[in-house]
Length: 220
Image (tube, rainbow, N blue to C red):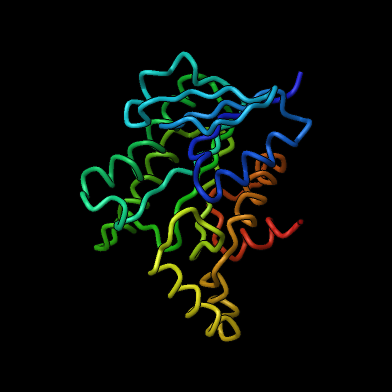
């Protein structure tokens, strides 16, 4: 019998790529996605749950599998209300980890961000840091938190700030080496590859910085 995966954030840039990886991987028999709107995809392995992700705890009975991949995240531009922002970036991953623990799921992989720090005075970094603490607090055996730098890739919507950031990163990339290497921009495909690989490898590292994500995810 093959593995069963749960994916949150399948409509996002990295989540879409990861979903395709999982559907193509013959070691998986079932992929469950929890999403706020239907993706309109049909596949023998795929089971879609259109739900209120802010009420994920109501779907505990359906939240069953061997691995959870959490690619949830928003931006200040899309979600200006900090309370709602926190419910998304902290609340959804934290609740997913709690459900995974309660249902005996042994692997939990989540996308955080470079600079995540629960003690930070920057709201975004603090929220991500607190999310990491909540996830690690569940003590799921195979927990992996990936901290990518600026994520590159073709998005459905324009993000001017990220476009400018990518240009700046490209200019300074030759100077980002050694301890600064983790600040290089990274492709969404590389992050998806790394998450897929980490689920198979059972790495001893719990927190994976962006330069390490690049190494792990560069297999394609």
